Each structure stands twice: as C-alpha cells, then as structure tokens.
Length: 499
Image 1: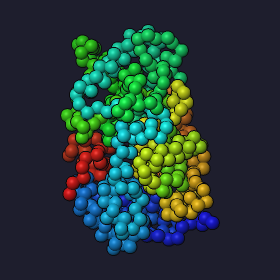
Image 2 (image 1 turned 30 degrees about the horizontal axis):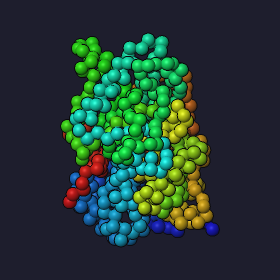
Image 3 (image 1 turned 180 degrees about the vertical axis):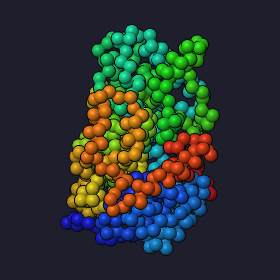
Image 4 (image 1 turned 45 degrees about the vertical axis):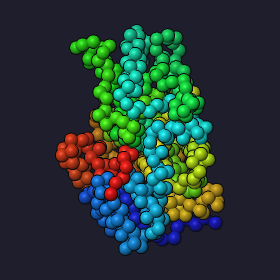
C-alpha cells in the first residue's frame, strides 16, 4: 500500500540558486519535511524562502572541491540529514565524494563514474546506440585537423545552399531561435515543420530533411556511424559544456559566409578559429543537425526502475539562445518508453542499476517521427515545475521502493504549465514576431503559474534580482556571459577534480 505522503525527513538541498531547487523545497516542505539548503553563492532563491528552515554558505565546489565536501559532510552530521538532494551541476562534485557522503545519509546521486559518460555528449550517444535506440550521427573532435575537416564540409554545404534559387530555400529553419540551455536540445529548431527541401531533387546538397536523421550502426571502433556525419548541416559544441556561447550552429556559418563574402573570398574565410583548449582532455563533438520538435524529459529512477516521469515542451526562452522560460506538460507515453529502454540498456552494458534524477533533450524528427536524443542532464531540470504537491513527487524522492513494488509512476497532469515570469516577459520583448505570434505568446502567459512567485512566500521573488545583479558583476570581472557567471562556481566540464 502506498501512503499519500512520506514520513517526515530532514532534507538538505544543494543548488539553491535554481528555480528547480526552490520548487523542490516548497513541495517537500508542504509534505511536512524539514528543509535545509547549502549553497556556495551569496544570494540564491532558497535563501529567503519560508519553506527553508536554514541556509548555509559553502566553499565553491569548482574552485575548492575538497573544502566543499568537508563542509558539506559536517552539515550532514550536525543537522542529522536523512537525504542529500543535489539539483544543479554541483552534483558532479557531490558524486566525486559519493562514498564519503553516502556513509552519512542517503545521497540522491550515483557515483561520478556513472555520471561522467552521461554528461559527455559523445559518450552519451554511444550509450544510446548500445541500448538499441536511434541517435544523430556524432563524431568526436580532439585536434585541429578534425576541426578543419568538419568546417570544410560545413563550408561546402553552406555554399551549396546559398547557390540555390531563393524560391527553393526555406530560410526559416536557419533563422529560428535555437534552444541551447540545460532543458532544451542544442542542435534543434524551435518548432517542427516540414522543410521545403523535402520534395526537391538536389544533387549538390543534403538538406535537413533528406536521408536518415540518424543511425544506429557504428564503425568498427564503435565510436561513430559508418554512413558519416558530413552529408549535411552539423553542430559543433564542446563535449561537456552546455552554454550557447560555445555552440556553433549552421546559422552561424551561413551568416559568416555572407558577412565575409562582402569583403573577401568566401571560399577561404568561411571558418571559425580552432578553440585554444581543444584536445583529448577538452574535446568537442560534431553532431548531425536535426529538424523537428523539441521535447524534454525529467525522470527519477530507483535501482534501474523509473518511478517519476515528465515530458514537456518549451516554446519560449529568455533570448534567442537562452534558457527555457515556459514549460508545458505533454503526454509522456512515448518518452517514458524511450527512457526505460535507455536505462535498461545502460544497466545491461554498464552493469549497474542507475538511481537518481536524469533528464534528456530529444528531437521528434520531422523526417521519420522517431525520437532522437541530443544530450543528457543527470540532474534536476525544469520538469519538476510541472508537478503539483497532490501528484506525489515526494514519494518518488523519498519512498521509491513503494512505487517500485506497486509498479506505479508519478507523472504530472497533461497540460500542466509553469513559467519564469520575468524572463518570459523579456522573451516577448526581444522577439520580432507577427501578430499571430504575439497572440500565442499572450495566450501562453495567461493562466500559467510563475515558478518563483508565491503569495505566501515572496522572498525568492525579490531575491532573484540580487542573484542576477551578483552574476552580472561577476560576468564583468571574469569577462564571461551572465549565464556562465550564474554557474561559474559549480560548473564541471570533465576536468579532474583535484584537492
């Protein structure tokens, strides 16, 4: 028998700067649990929330990993914590100290050796294929030669597209905003629609809708598909980083082609500089650019069994390549089947039963209607905003054994919506839309719950301004974007974690 609520527990959340951490704090507090938060940022959303009993400042895990783990361990003991619940990229540093922390309390994260191949975009695609699922063609780039080969193919593709008659080219698929945050596919379109290329016979160019969107076969070394990646548009991106400023899309190369073509020879100048840090230790990947609809998932898995699942789309973002700010639940049947097959395949090939939170960015291909994965985020993502307290998400977090025994999966109600209001307003202000686009935007705004504002818990709404101001100051000091500044102290890009 499943109880409606779990027995009260003492829970420590990390990553309190994120709206998803605030969401979990409020829902768990509503269930009668005592919530604490540990953060390395001076300002964070959970710091001023009524749902949080106390908040503690920790050393930055990226810069001081051992000090972070030592202080975190002390808190777990002093506060008699029963569950440690990471929410952001600090999870990788917690996973690094998993054995140490798991001796004190339950940690909702697997060890780092299980998270690393999920966080690495190339290794993740390999796991997808091993599970028998289709995936976009993906190749690892570790040196300047491979980088130049990828760009040479892109150059030929862009030039072929530019040489086509205007009535044959559909410019919208290269000009639409691109989803590039943790919740949305990096190499995808904002909306799914058939390409005008689909019914044309072209001998000089492979289009987004031509041929297979991906493949399941591998080369002899098991690293990539044998039919090659350079038969159409590709995306270049670091194997670990999730920031839009580091992702090179086909639209970038097409604009580069046009701009440089006004001044010099397009044939020789259509290229981006080789990243200074490009190496086997800091690789990039080239991945087939897919046309289709964006679908994101969020799941909680216990010993290889999915106990909670949400599928959602996000149509609006804070900027053209910014974070998702509006979330709407979808029927999760197809994505649930996909996640289950992936988890089962991972268990079969890796020999371990995954337990923790895991999220995927998927493309519903406009070519063959299959689901193609783009990347994996083994942590909390915005899908948690779609669950309401009555859905019972706390059971998946605190009593997963009960759900496994009852063969039950916690899911949000279809059509459930949430948004981040201030970024949502910015997304509308920055776009150049038609009248119909504005009507859809206003309709999306109406009746959608703000994930931060709550009439009985207004502190986080004010705190978000302090948080953004602090990030802006850091971005000026470090000469990075505000987005990067928001995770400057917790980001992990595969580098060895040293004391």
